[in-house]
Length: 78
Image (tube, rainbow, N blue to C red; front, side, top):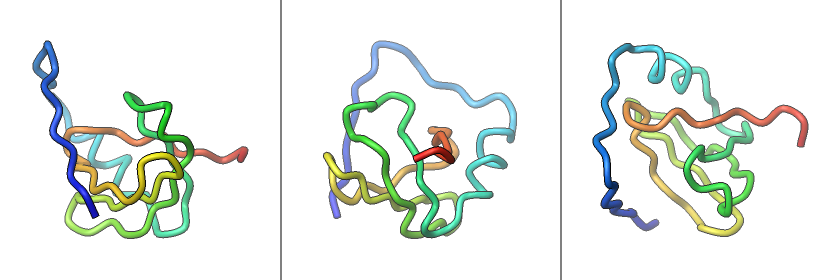
């Protein structure tokens, strides 16, 4: 497992719980995309515990996502 650190030229602020609410629906086996990393491909959710979502991406490997900062995009037509 690896963790990525990003230095973004802007501040990402979450104003509402909607992002974490959507991520709370993600379950192991579901397919998702990372909104800022399209080159990672379609990943499969491995776990979703306490807002930390572990996803296995074909081009990036196993990544732990902070669900309070990133809203993963569910993929239904893969």
